[in-house]
Structures are given as structure tokens and as C-alpha cells.
Picture (cartoon, one colour):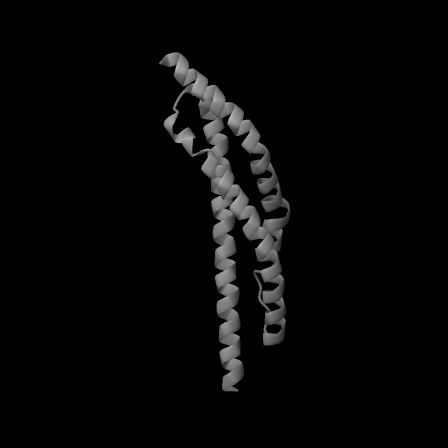
Length: 132
């Protein structure tokens, strides 16, 4: 039984190394592109015209960002089996996995919040534009 468990752990380590390339690519994109683009969209313009332009730019960015979120979540899903292993040999991989998971969840949440905020702001500006 111990031998089988060790073999399973080694298989997981090999699987992690394959999936880690995807994690690294997604993580790098989030840090080098994603977060910067989200920060650029924190301050929304005061005119409806400029706000609609920002919304259009965000939608283009959102398509790419959502694809990275999806890829990251798929990679994490492949590693769900790690939860069953608690050995010291696997511990460092579990820490890496949790770091990737935290980064991805934080970014995807910020993306959702920005999507909602921009949409609601556009709706509000359109409403005020109709009232005038």
C-alpha cells in the first residue's frame, strides 16, 4: 500500500510539472497584462461617450482575460486530486498550487467586479442622459 501511495504521489508530481507550464503562462499574463489593464479601468470617464468607449475596450480585454481565467481554472481542476495527499514530498507542490489558485481567484473576482461596475455605470449614465 505504501508503495502504491508513493507511486501515485510521483505520478501527481509528474502531472503537476506538465500542468505547471499552463499555470506559469496564466500567472505571467495576469501579472504583466491583466492587473495593469484592470488598474487602467479603475477611473471611469465623466461622459457617456467616453464611458461607452471604455466599455468597448473592456469587452475586448474581457474576452482575452476570461479565456486565461478559464484555462487557469481547467488546470486547477486537473490538480484536484492533490487534496488527498498530505505527505511531506507533495507539500511544496500543494503550496505552489494554492498560490496559483489564490492569484487566479483574486484576478477573476476583480474582472467580474469591473465588468459589473462598468455595466452599471453605463446604465446609470444612459438613464441620466435620457432624463435630460
